[in-house]
Length: 454
Image (cartoon, rainbow, N blue to C red; front, side, top):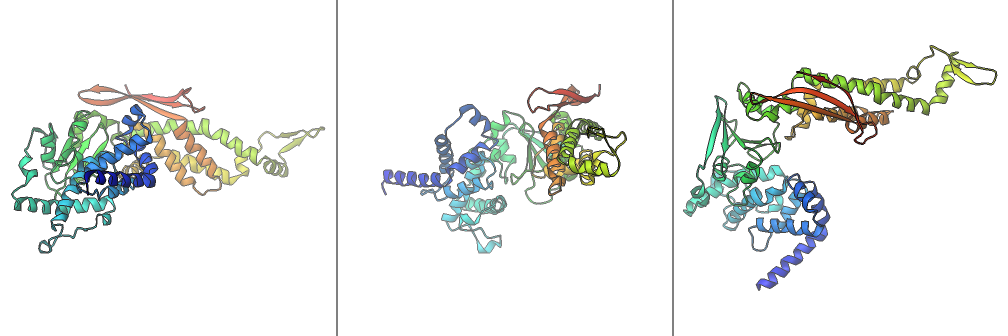
């Protein structure tokens, strides 16, 4: 096939893929955290995003006929490739090894007793599949390279420049200072900062803040490593899967002082809910509860009373709590039962809402652990989001679900928490917090409450 014919064929295939998946690719790119700033600045049209994506995908595909591009598209759309930047880095390296082993009939060696690697790339569907195959690929690729006396990865891999900034009986903490050291200490991982064959993103991350590589002194399994980047809130294991930072530092390395080390060297950690003091969390919750009681619930109760006022007044009349004058004007007697005494279902809903808003420390930490299981992290400003989820979840399917929904929307939509810290001895200390209310949903809010810790 002539070159121009191949290019025409490739373009035709690209056009078909764009026709089938173009809109979804654009949506996925718009939701990729690594592309948000670029998209916001450049404001690209869909065609430009298509060209950007397929250029990267085709460059990551080591085959002549680009047989893996369709697989890249599918894995990007189903989030098995979780970040766009991974395509040109660790996925490109993954495919390079996979394709070269496959074309040499070396994907599987019956004599080594290792787990079989699918010869059909489409059988590798999930992120877990990719990680598992990558684990099996590495030693097979190294054997092939050694046999050919062409182990380019090992020959090129030097220790580079790095600093061991912390060490105890549990863990070593390494700060790579150049790409070479990021690759050396990242050997065997799926990190884009350790890629030696695809595009390497060390400089991109390092320009925003230091990378920390945690190497357990006594690994729980072969190849166990972690990489932390606080500025991007990315805390990853060797398979490039998110890990919960609190669980990693407090549980995995229990007994170590590594938490205290990071609190000094990376002060932003003190702003995370997981590392905040119980007293501060409860102070913030107390203000939120008062706001819900005083500002959010009264109009909701008025609304439900208005919806059921006929039945409520009939009930009051039966109890002798209504007065009528000569003109049949109705007046409720002093001391008449409140509407919630009539509507016990609404009363239960209000009590249930307040019970869940008034969360204790353990409940908040449990919610954080569940929500951050995939590596997300929360700051104190996110407490309202946690409480909203509690309220929404408990109200689902309840008779007055709309009441739960309105409280939830108020928690996250009409409240804001501001925190101020001061720097002391290389660590952040909370100076105060303020809770602001935005009842109209815009920026015209007011300070509802707060506390100083000076």
